[in-house]
Length: 482
Image 1 (cartoon, helix red, strand yellow):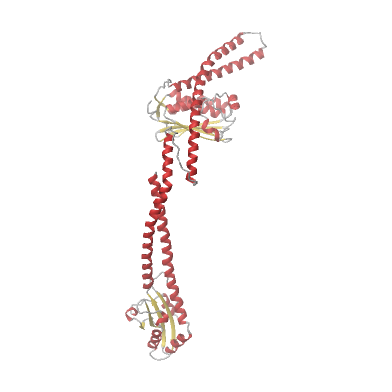
Image 2 (cartoon, one colour):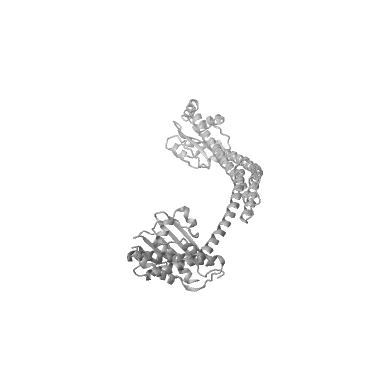
């Protein structure tokens, strides 16, 4: 972890330095190029706008040998024009054909290409078009007189700006190299300052994860890491207390379940015996009252019997004494059987109750009766907690090495704060509603235990008032140790 953070911090700082220098270099080199181009055209316009040079050029064009006379005038103003005979030259061109008549470097003049500015001058207009994307800068000015038609042509090959940018690039590269060396040192120092307390926190967190809460991280800094360290220590203390409390609560709850299981069996037998006696008593009670009592007693005794059965089953889970009958069976047939068994109940509540399978389902290895018990619980919950006339969809398919079955309804839904607790024993989202529908709070706990024994899992999505979607996933090959 520490090495990773070191690397990330160093790389980020290096990339920032390189990117910053690259951007600065690009702006500087672009600025030098633009300055050189703007300076060239500004100077040309300033020089040729001068009244004395313009008058001299027009006068030279009136006589014989006009090309040479104009060349002499340009030669006399080489300093003002910046002509050096190497990177910048002047030429006198034929105003009709554009061919070079004379100039400061006839080797260059003999290979002149016809540029946009020359074409502009051949048409009788001044050519000051900027050619920023080309390898040259030029100005072409037409001059007409009695001696003929000529073009004053100034060309710069940009070698100077190229050399300047090359030097500037070398300076930037050297600056980047020095900056990288400095940034590496600073980034390593910064990374060490940040990573060391994080490493201490990591070691402490690993011990906490292993159940050892004895180590506390010492960091008195007032920055964010210091606050994080103190928060971690407080969290570890609270977590240690909560774990101990949970252990005690879990032990007490399991003992309670075992005790209640044994305590309820005798009252259940007595209630059922009393109900049967009342039923056979004849006319000793008002028939209507007698019948009402009988129905209540029988109903409650059935519910208590169910609780006892569920409690005993969970106790056997806890004790590890419950045996599973693992064998290959048709998952598709089990789903269809459970669906058909619940169809009448769904129809009595006027639900839109449908089953759809995503292709054929393979056989899976597991305890068929227990899996069907899980499916039955999922579907019966959807029926019970969906208002009459609701919509319930049962879908199943295969994904990867698992089969799945999803039960989706548009019922009452489950609040977000209750989603993580619905598999707890005796936990009810709404105790009043659960009693009204006959729930004990143990069905999903049992289903969860069964699915875990099959190396399976549940996924759950729900929104209050919009419905619930619960999916059971089971490995096709059964549990690894089953």
